[in-house]
Length: 176
Image (cartoon, rainbow, N blue to C red; front, side, top):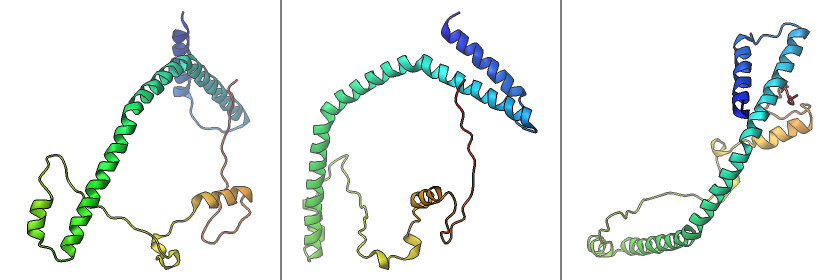
């Protein structure tokens, strides 16, 4: 029997046991049996990962080599693309400014922008915050990461207005 066949058999066995597991812990014996079963599952997961690791590593190295080859050609092409798009946008802005200053828009639009198949100008909008204090509250974000760090640091003994602290438990397990 090869390693993959053994792994497959072991996984099927655990999944079969899992199907009959009720998932309800009523006493210390159930708790201990479930903990041991969990460790067995973790151990099997580790074995599966170890079995496939050499193939994953080899495939990843191939993938990295392919990406390197792609980037060798596309990096300079991407720079050229960005440069041309910037030049086209700058030209469009120049023409738009002339129209805003009162130039004949109908004639200028006909001569300034020839119809090029596959090329379009998309209007996009951006913003720049100039005064954070003036921004309305509905546009502000709560810093969840900072709150989580403070609650963890203080082990829940913190009083941040508008925040309720919850105690949660997470089971950690090692394979056996």
